[in-house]
Image 1: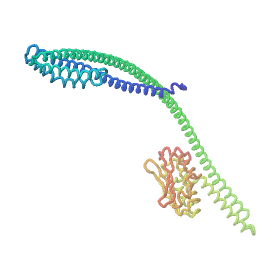
Image 2 (image 1 turned 180 degrees about the vertical axis):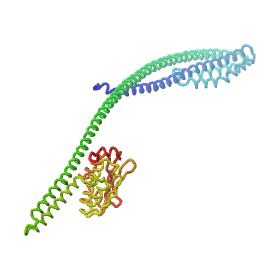
Image 3 (image 1 turned 60 degrees about the vertical axis):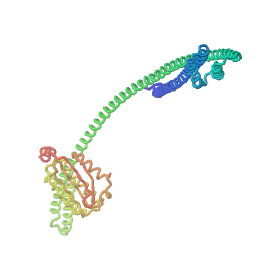
Image 4 (image 1 turned 45 degrees about the vertical axis):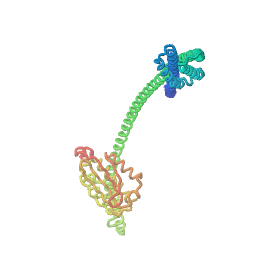
Length: 466
């Protein structure tokens, strides 16, 4: 079935969804970091506002100690109050410095703090003068002291008013920071939930698409395996059919070759027997007709010579078509005779050492004989050799026969020539195989290997041997 475009784009869509989910998680991480930094800043500012409020309270408390110590001393003349006064004065400078440090940068506090500083110093200076003027009882001093007391009260009232304003603004700052922190936390929580849910949804959607793609791939693989199985079955069936056809062709070729050999055997016998008898009868009739006739002696001698050549030609043709030695004495004797004829005709020295021919079937013997004939023909035509050696014998369960020359090798005989193809086909018909290689003397070596036939099979394969 053809796939839809959507299915074809599933992997790409899954990658996009997965990338989108990862990007959202990255945005979530960045947003969480930004919110955390904002919360840290707001919390720090809130802490500074609280610390400033606390430090303002400390400054006011020390200032109250200064005023309490002054009043207590002036009213009771008890110097114990002076220790409270001195401790308050000593603590004001570091308290004011700490207050300046923690409240720096807070909105609406810097101006009040700068206005508060001289008032505090002024109040301390008034209290110090009041204490220093205490031993003097003159009316002028008493009047000046009263004026200082009134100025100290007014200054203290301004200081308290200033502190109330600072406290109000600091508390407002703390409340504002609390609201910002709360809003930031809500926004961060909402962003986290939304981004997490969206990212998880995208990743789950990508996972679903990948799972669907995996299922599709598994189905496609299963369909491919089934198609491969069907193809293998079709190939096996076709191979079996081809092998059967090949076997049938081989059997037909073997049957045809056996028929040809049988026809050759019959023709050889006909030529040998019939023509031989005819030539012999003609020779007798001619001798009877011309013997004693005056002037025909020379003709009689010539006719006898021609008839002898005809008889020899008939025997040679019969021997070429089907050597009698092959049927009578076996492969070894037939090859020895063929080697001698080849040596006489081609002028090439031929050695033959063939044994165990009786272990071959008739079909194998005739095929080997024809292979040797073809090999010797190729040597005479192409090899340019001076020596040929034919060697054969049983080698375990197989029979090996080789024809080796000292000629030009494969350079003088193309590997795809008709003669070599014929030799390979005959080796296959005999149930064996043929191999070409380089001989010990540099020429061509043709080696045929056949499975040995049982003695019973060798006898049954040739009806003429019974």
